[in-house]
Image (cartoon, rainbow, N blue to C red; front, side, top):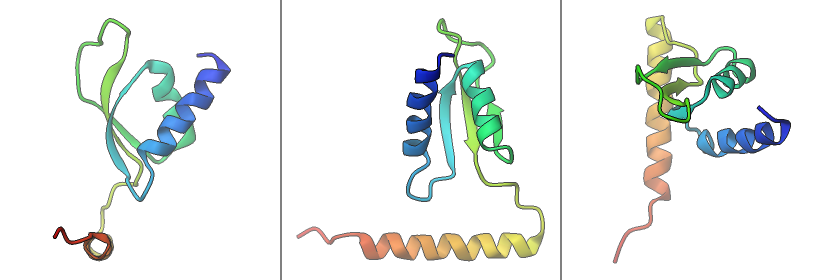
Length: 96
């Protein structure tokens, strides 16, 4: 992958995971998967599609958050998600 492509790909990642988004399905090449793994070592990448497309890219589920294991962590995550939902509700503008 050429250096300029990495800069463009970095911008793509920033936009993809902006505003508190931690999970996305992305179509990535092998080089891009390697870059994501280096940039986000705790991220999990799960290949969704067995066969690659003609350009060699495959779909991946990319989760930047580490896996939640303990029940206490699960409670914290639930509270965080509830707060996030409340913030989203407050940010909505009623349609008249």
